[in-house]
Image 1 (cartoon, one colour):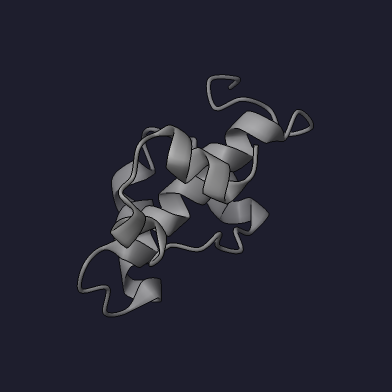
Image 2 (cartoon, one colour):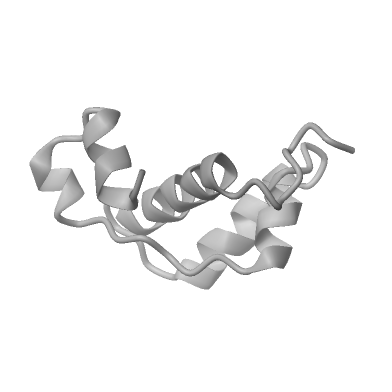
Length: 82
């Protein structure tokens, strides 16, 4: 499944989908977001890194990219593997 297919599958409206794009996610962010203890700090850091995100589309793009990566990357340990 690719990014656009994910957006369609979860029922995002077209006017939202046209504002989203798959984001580049580095390994450090991916691993940290899987740690429940780091989640709040990771979100704050990501918001700062994204800058102004009036409608939340960039953050949503990051979250969907992370979800897609978790689903499609068998080489990366699942989040619950600690």
